Length: 569
DNA sequence: GCCGTTTTCGGCCCGACTGTTTTCAGTCG
Ligand SMILES: Nc1nc2c(ncn2[C@H]2C[C@H](O)[C@@H](COP(=O)(O)OP(=O)(O)OP(=O)(O)O)O2)c(=O)[nH]1
Ligand SMILES: [Mg+2]
Ligand SMILES: [Mg+2]
Ligand SMILES: [Zn+2]
Image (cartoon, rainbow, N blue to C red; front, side, top):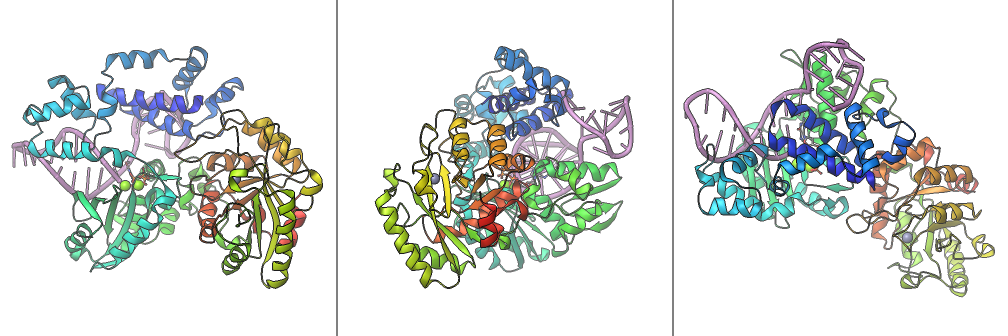
C-alpha cells in the first residue's frame, strides 16, 4: 500500500537528514517523522486523497510534503529522496538500530573512521579506533557491543497479548519491593496499542528509599541485564529479551507522571506546547504556573488545568483528541461493563477446545446475558466446519442446553465462510435458522476482497462481517479492500462490522473503526474464543474499540438480548 | 517541514542517565 511505502520514505528521509546534521533541518526532520506516523494510520489511501484534492487537509501535510506525495504517486519516486539516499552509505539505516548510537555518533564514526555499516562499526571497536574518538571510550564501546547483541530483541515490537503475563508478573514482583506503594502500566500498553516496543511501569513510593527500590527492581530474578539505572528511572531487559522501563515518583506526583509516561510522545509534545504557549509548563512533575505547581496528583487535574476534558489513554495519539477535549467533545467511550454478551465463539463442534456447555458456563460467569456459538461452516474443513447434518445435531444439543441454563441464552450461530465468489457457504433456508450469522473471509488473502464482502453483506441473513481485514499481526497483512465501499454497504444494509478481540487480529483496525463510525456503521466486539479462557479477551477488544472512539450506542452487543434481536437485520 | 495554541512569522517539550567531560553532549523516555 502506498501509504506504508510513503511512511517508510519519510522516516528514511528524516534519518538521512539527522545523519547529515544540518541544525537548520531540525524541524524539517520532525515534520517528516510526524507525517510518517500520520500516514501510517490514515484511514484512506493517499492516492484517493490526491484524486479528491483533500491531501492538504491532513494535519502535518503542507505544501512541501504534498508535492512529494504527488510526485511519488505520479513518478513512483521522489527526487529529493533519491538524491539524499545517494549522499549517504546504505548502512546508516542499520546503524540507527544500534542502541546508544544516534545521529551525532553515527556521523562522527562515518566522517572520522569511514564507518558506514554495522560490520565496519565492529571493526572500529575491535581495532580500538572508535575508543579514541572524542567523547567515546572503552565503556561506550562495550555498551555498543552489548547493544549490538540485543538490538534485535529491543527493536522488535510484540503483540500486546503476548505481554499480558509479563506485565502482571512484573507488577506483582515490584509491589513486594520495600518502599513502593503503587505500580501501574503506562506507555503503549496502557494505551492499548496493538504492539508494544517495551513495557513501561510507573511506580510511586518513598523517594528516600529510591536507591533501595531500584536495586530491588534490578535484582528481580527475571532480569537479564540492566541498561540504565538511576534514582527515578531504571531500564532492564528480561530473560526473554523484553525491555522494561520503570519510572519512580513521589505519591503526590503520580498523576502528572502517569500522564507523561502514558504518552503518546506526540500527545505529550502537543500538550506541553499548549501549556508553554500559555506561559505555563507541563512535565512529569506537574503542571506549573511559574514556580508554583498547580496540578500533579491526578491525571484528571492535569487535563483540567489545561482547560481540557479528561482524555482516556486509548485516545492519546495526537490525532484530534486534544482539540476535542478543548471543546469538551470527547464522547463517553464504551466500557467493559456495558458488554452484555459475545457474538462470536467456537466450541468442540468445530475447532474450539471446549464444549458448548463449558463455554456457556464461562460466559455466564462473566455476567453475560447471551453467547453466540458460531462454529465454522462446511467449507472450512481444516477447522471441522459443520455439514448440514451436523448442524442439526448441534442445534439439538443447543436447545437442550438452553433449557438447562438459567441465566444465559446460547444463541445458535455460525461463522460462515464467504466463498471466493462472494456467496455464503450455507443456503439461505439454512442461514435463516440461525440467531447469529457471522460471515468471514478465510481464503484468498492476496487479492482484493471488496466485492466478495459487498456481496456477502447483501445477503439478508448475514448479520456481522467477521475480522473484516483478515490480518494476523506480524504474520499476515490485511488483504486489499476499499473501506469506503465496505462502510457504505454496511451502513446501507444494516450489516454489523466486527471488532475482533483476538490479539493477533484486533480487526477492524482502530483508525478504520473511527472512520466507519463517521459512516454510521455499527460494531460487534467479539472475542472469537476457541477456549473458555479467551472469552476474557473481550476486555482487550473493548479497549481496542475505545481507540476507535466507540461509544455504547455504536456497539450491538451492548444491547440486551431482545433489543439486539430487533437491531440485527 | 508545518501551523495558527502567543504570533500568518516565529515558534516547534522537557527531563533522566551515562561517560567523559572539567562543565556537558548525546541518547533516550
Ligand atoms: N514528553 C515526552 N515524553 C516522551 C518522549 N518519549 C517518550 N515519552 C513518554 C511517552 C511514552 O508513551 C512513554 C514511554 O516511552 P516509550 O518509548 O516506551 O514509548 P511507548 O510506550 O509510547 O511506545 P513503545 O510501544 O514502547 O514503542 O514516555 C519524549 O520525547 N517527550
Ligand atoms: Mg513503551
Ligand atoms: Mg519505554
Ligand atoms: Zn474466522
